Image 1 (cartoon, rainbow, N blue to C red):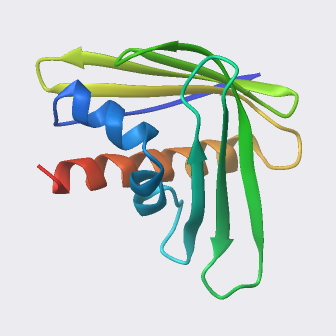
Image 2: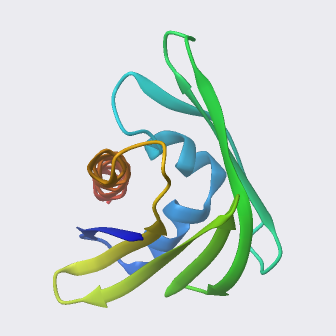
Length: 135
């Protein structure tokens, strides 16, 4: 089952793309809530390249690595990647009101579909706020 989340970012697509694919930027926006943060991020933005983000609770109680491999990249338009036995697609669609960033990913079985949707949406909302604040 696939889940899709999206947001509109009021910024040029080049800035949106850069913030989505630059490790120092990722560390600023990649969290679903205020009590989490990303402490490390690496990006090798090419087909076959690896990425990884270390996500941790700010109180130190829990952390995990979100990592995978890029399978398709079209600059300023599309990123596909695999992570574990799942895959995801990130689309960047320029429009009159900004750039729609749409993420479609395969659901996992540990958490409810709604919890997964809410978590990924929260991260995407943080991303939009981060990019727009840097204008």
